[in-house]
Amino acid sequence: MNNFTHQRAQEQSELTVQLSELQEEMAFTKGIAGPLYSAFVIQEPQQANCELHGHFEQNYLTLEYRGRLSERRSRCPHCLKNAIDAAEIRKRQIRIDELTEQANIPPRFTSSEFNNFDILNTCASQNISVLRDYAASWPTMLAAGTSLIMCGKPGTGKNHLAVALAKDIIRNHESAVLMTSVMRIIRAVRRSWDKGADMREEDVIGIYTSRDLLIIDEVGIQYGSDSEKIILFDILNARYEDMLPTVLISNLAPVEIAEVIGERLMDRMVEGDGATLIFDWPSYRSRKGAVSA
Image (cartoon, rainbow, N blue to C red; front, side, top):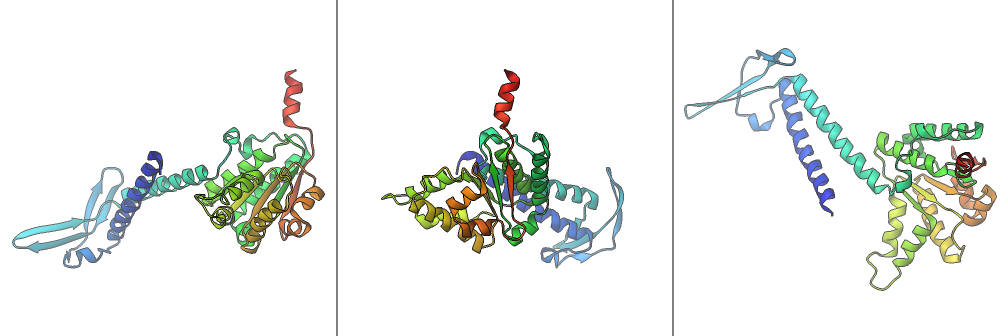
């Protein structure tokens, strides 16, 4: 664990404690004192004044012990609510930052969003609409294990939209997403076969089969050996059986993708509300080059 990760974990822990204390105080504003104050005597509520929110009814407890008087007074409920909201927002943001970091988003695409995607044609408009709807309906998509295939020509924005999808799901639903490629998966699994490897094969496979959403790029780039096909099949099939969504990205046509992953898996990828999105327009990169030229 690096220093930044440690600091984030420590802040998360401190916020959890802070929220617990604030929620206990909020309960006291409603007359719930908690077991620590069971020996205290409940007094008649009093009118108190908050500099920010004005008058409020203040609960009041007292305890007399050996001639000394201890008391507890409730705080302004509006101030407490604001403090709880701020702590929850910060705690949520820490979690989102953590999930975003763990998603393995390529640095080139860190700024990719739905709202800065260049919609050049009707097909692009339809594709982004499907992906926006998918993200907005993520709880339903996750529950049903609904997967997607994004395929077509290079440079047409597939990765841009995949990253936008991942970020939207992380931000709005705090789900665990992982972006990778077929060759990264193959290399990671093969490293586990080495003598003295840090991870066993099943542990590596578990990384890819446990995330809420797995996005696999460059489908079809692999050499197509039997071992590669088995590795890919094991991961995709495990996710299918566990009803976990997967997004495949490829420069191949659908029929060619079916040859790579097999007809059975191809059929499972678009089962239910799953869809194949075709990106068949000229490359953005070549278009920009032509404009600049």
